Length: 243
Image (cartoon, rainbow, N blue to C red):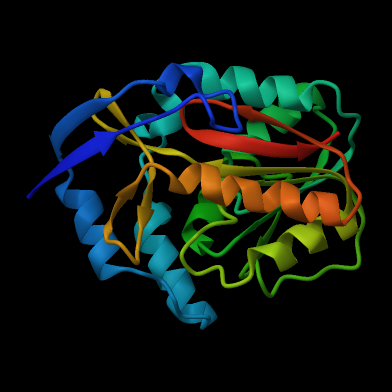
């Protein structure tokens, strides 16, 4: 099965996506992604169903072949966002196998890190790599804590198909952390190609406008809570974070 995807961009985008300002038609094989989108929409709020779903999707996820590894832009962008932040106590929500944990420890090796994810298989891989990290198996929308953190990180999770009210998650993050970093996925990797966009379940296609639209929902909540914010983008995602 093949997709024909038309990518169109304009200079009106609210984030610095200059590297994507082109129009091109890409016809590629995306059988595995289409099968996933059609078979596993993950609309359930049952934790056992969600755990099974995300174990299948991310429990054995090949970290070395995703959008973040396409070039060095994620490494540079995320490191630059972390650099000015003074933190000790960190929570990473949607931690998966621990991509962000390594960056946090590089900046502060003595960080106290809590990692939350719905995939218990991914969490076990994370703890095998980082045994001192506290892991919590939970659904992001039902997770609550009495702790206060210096830094809250939630990358490529806030707009997952099972999230019903992302604004409540953002509000809660602002309540329990001094500094908050969110990101919204903006591309898919197919071999040596990057396809810009996000799968639109209602339209059943890759929607090139959806990443920008979804990313705008985060600063709206920041503004309602009187929090200043900034944005940065890279090949894999759009970051929105407090200043």
